Amino acid sequence: MRISSIYKIKNGLGKFVAYTILIFVALACIFPLFWMFGSALKTQSTVFSDFSLFPKHMHWENFTIAWTKAHFGMYFFNSVLYTVITVGGLVFFSTMAAFAFSRLDFPFKNALFLMFVCMMMIPLPGQFVALYVLLTKLHLVNTRIGYILPQIDAGQALAIFILKTFFDNIPRDLEDSARIDGCNKWGIYWHLAFPLAKPAIAVVIIFNCLAVWNEYLLAMLVFSDKSLMPLPRGLMVFQGTHMTEYALLMAGVSITVIPIILVYLVMQKYIISGITAGALKG
Image (cartoon, rainbow, N blue to C red):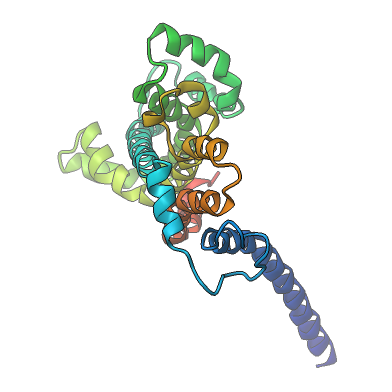
């Protein structure tokens, strides 16, 4: 009994310490977001004089001014457009490629898959010199398509790796049953593999939504026209124009950050379920 009691006390104490540390880490991550949103509701004169998290008199008009004065409506539309098209195209091509690597036999299959895996070690900024030369020769600089295609390409390697591993774990018996029912390879992919891969696809969608929405360096390289810029690039233009208007700047940052936080909160459960369902199984 004593040994059992001591074990329970130590186990409970360990959990208490772990939860306490996690709570402090969570507060350290969340506090800047609340400070940002609270600062967006203050005036220029009270941003650094009012130290309350949220002011007594909230100035919601800061968001309206930032939305109209800094053209954040246009930047917001651009970010939504780029995110939807990029992630949609990435899911479409990566699921088909991963299914082909998992279920089809063709020459140099292993070598090509190894090439995709090796591409994971090369970040997009490391390709900027060659990428800019290519976009210039194709006359895609300062165009939407010149911004979308490189991001689809950049996300392919990880997406194919995750999805192929998931498809490898689908039982062959299910594929044989679908073939008996008259499905060809396309039918097996569309009616069997694709629906079963929804948890892994959700992981790919979440990771790439975060990456595309927050992307800045490629936008700085490709775009010079303000009407084509996404939110992060537009925010830097706004900061350069309104550097001392901190309340409006915080309102612009809030407009940039809040949508993707909401998307993450809604879909975060799919990260764990997708991984445990086989997205990253060996």
